[in-house]
Image (cartoon, rainbow over all chains, first blue to last red; front, side, top):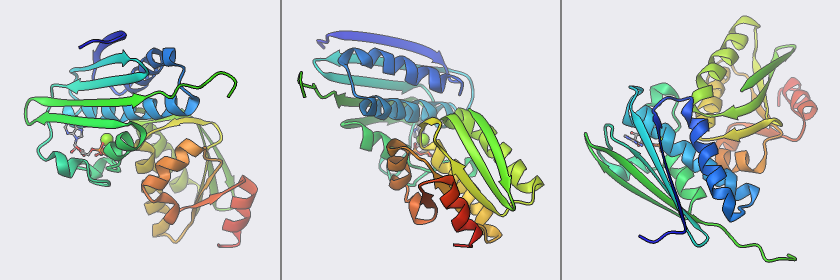
Length: 146
Length: 115
Ligand SMILES: Nc1ncnc2c1ncn2[C@@H]1O[C@H](COP(=O)(O)OP(=O)(O)O)[C@@H](O)[C@H]1O
Ligand SMILES: [Mg+2]
């Protein structure tokens, strides 16, 4: 695939890295001059997917989470991948308020947040193999003088 | 995340300064619950002026404290949430059960009157 810019990072599935991941993606995206609101949307969506990889994918065993970002024109494509448990029923998982871990005070709103804050969210998952979340968002171009 | 607590009568005001995500949630939850239990607290106000990031982990923290406070008939309020946080709370229907106030004084006054 053709793209204008690209980056890839790999880190341990430790909860300390949730903030690391969203800051790295936000600074990569900043070359598109996003608004503060667009940046907050992207940081939140990244935080959701990375948190899911850590608590649901790996259930807190320490393995690797991979993030790839591509910029094509004014669009950012973010792929967040784990090689953990996978999702049995994707349709159920994306329902608002559905969580498989209510005992951890999870709200079940992670996928709803990703889908609200990003333009597109694709979920690819296989039980026992892992989960790949691809999200895209087009950053609006602000005309000079507006 | 830095937590600051203030107590007025039986009302606990929690200032959440920093980022509320899955990583910080556990500590936040424990700290608030310890304060509720040890200081005879009936009502809770979240002061969010300096919370500069929150994801859906924050929904779990707020609803969890609401359930605890609601058991003994108390009230929970939110003050100074920014538009981004409001969107996330609205998605989860939080403002159907928790009142949003413009200022801390307004929240204190309403809760003291038992509204
Ligand atoms: N990376 C993942 N690996 C395995 N299961 C996942 C993953 N991401 C999400 N899930 C499943 O989808 C459900 C819904 O996810 P989400 O909407 O983020 O809610 P929450 O994280 O609060 O449970 C989770 O409870 C979990 O069962
Ligand atoms: Mg989640």
